[in-house]
Image (cartoon, rainbow, N blue to C red; front, side, top):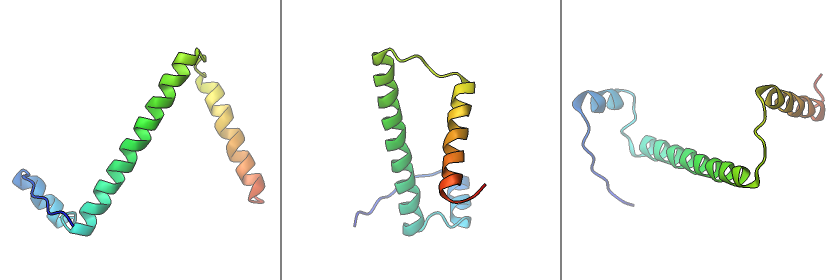
Length: 82
């Protein structure tokens, strides 16, 4: 287990304390979530770089919307929902 000491503005520390965010469990959860988001962002940017290098044309919002709707419809169908 690693012990970390941080300095925060008093108002931030008080608000975090009142919200229950300064417990080891809450801080672990916050940091784990932040790490996961950072890794996801890094992966997305990596994919974006490869797409750009491959010369793939960007999709229009209409194309993206149609793809999202198709995936959702397929998931509903597999789940047996209309």
